[in-house]
Length: 229
Image 1 (tube, rainbow, N blue to C red):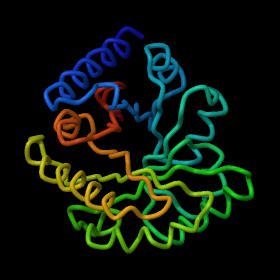
Image 2: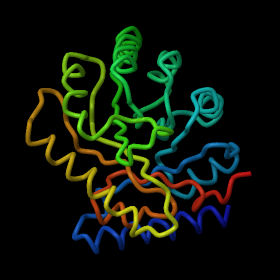
Image 3: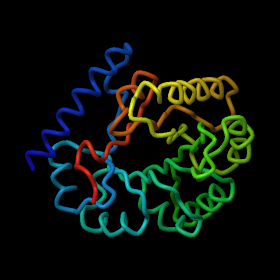
Image 4: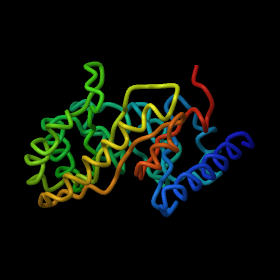
């Protein structure tokens, strides 16, 4: 318990300082504790230490944990989501960070309508143009958003990126800056029903740089729970 609580306290302090350096309100940055492969006892410790948002990569793993932990905290889907898991996803997650196809959006809309819900989503953008990573090309995001406008049960709330991994956080800064600039440019277009407020970017090794560039959601796992086996 002490290790996790201490880690969270230190990370929150670093979040606050990074926001202040950028002349931002620290309250505008939310910490998503990525709990992939983390056991339920350690997740409960994190919640006791103040965590209010948990991020999971796989629907089935999340479903088991949510059954044990409950929905008093918010659960976010931060990994790739397959369309055949949309039925479960709309019931389990408060936000999905990884929308990367029109067909997935349509399936989420259909499943959310059937469940009498709406689902908040972020569009995943492939800034590094890596074929191994999911996401919409930056040049195609505006075109991607237009078919989402009529989907009454899908609420587009921002953008997400998973840039190329570098050991030096400063080398990732241009990717974070590019996502913020893309978000700001798209907001000027004022597409009906599209509200691009959130920027999900930054992980354990680079979240401070992400915050300096405008992140509103930082996805931190290892720095809270330790290295995964």
